Every structure is written in C-alpha cells, then in structure tokens.
Length: 202
Image 1 (tube, rainbow, N blue to C red):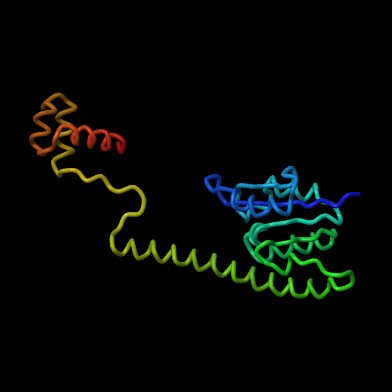
Image 2: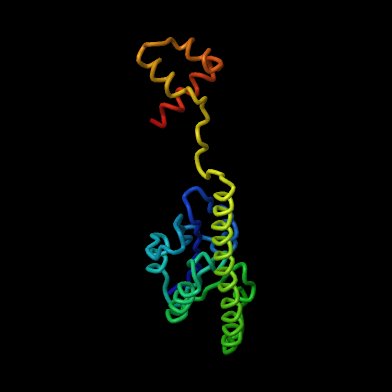
C-alpha cells in the first residue's frame, strides 16, 4: 500500500487565515486533498478536519504540520496525539522543528526520537507558558484600565445633562427639534446622529 504524506493546518478563529500554513506545507504534501484544515480552538477535541485526518491516516504515512501547537492547546493533549501517531506507525514532521524533518538510517530512529522528544517537551512547555503569560497580561491590562476608570468595550454616549428631559418633551410634541438643538447648542447633523445613538441604547 502506498505511503501518503498528509498535512494539517489550523487557526483558532474563522477570521484568521490559513494561507501561511498552507504555503509552508505545499512543498511536502503535493496533493492538496491530503491537507486537512480547521478554523477552531486547539482545546476543541472534536475539530472536524482533525477527526477526518485521524480516520484517513494509516501505518507508514507521514503527517506534516507547521508548528507543534497546531495539534492542541496544552502539553498533555499534544503528547497524547504524538503518542497515538507513534503507536499507529505514523511519522510526524514539524516544519518549525528541523530535527523532526530529518530522515535517518534504519536502526537509528531511536536517536532522532530521543532528540525530538526533548525538543517537543521544551517547545510545548514554552508555548504553554507563553499562552499563560498573554492571559495574565490581558487580565492585568483590564484591571489597570478599570482602576483608571476606562470603560472597555463600547464608549459611553456623551450627552448634555438636559438631554433626557428635552428629548422627552420633543417626543411628546411639546418642543420642536430646532428648539431642542438650540437649547443644547448642537448642529443639525450632530443632533440627529446623537438621537440615533441614544435611541439605540433605549
């Protein structure tokens, strides 16, 4: 049975682009039918493309990925998949980890396996630590912004203090729009823009 080169590419959200990873894999996986993809978080174990890839691969096949964290979000998950591939006789080649890309003479696989295991251990630990650091920085940034009174998200609508009372009078037909504008010293275009924004919050 013919051995096949497979590829797997993943981004975390639908807005992100797969092209960069696809270009990196193209030189190794010549038939794009064998490149599986997902636009889903690494913590999602049921990613459709990845599950289809697992079903398609057989002993002797090779899987190419751009970086180790495409397989999953944490070290345990990544190691579980790597162990599974090893047990099934599937070689994993990670473009960002050059030692995994090397072919070695028969009987010498254990050397490269040992080196790869060390590198993967270090790499996954670093990736995990980096993700934790980013999360911590985001949390700290939000906390600092709150202490400074910054509102994260939609900016609050700035309106003259008489606005609510005058708005109600205008809507009740007690005053005209022109009277309303003059009272709050607002030009027509700005006035109607503020009315639209205000009504969207009601």
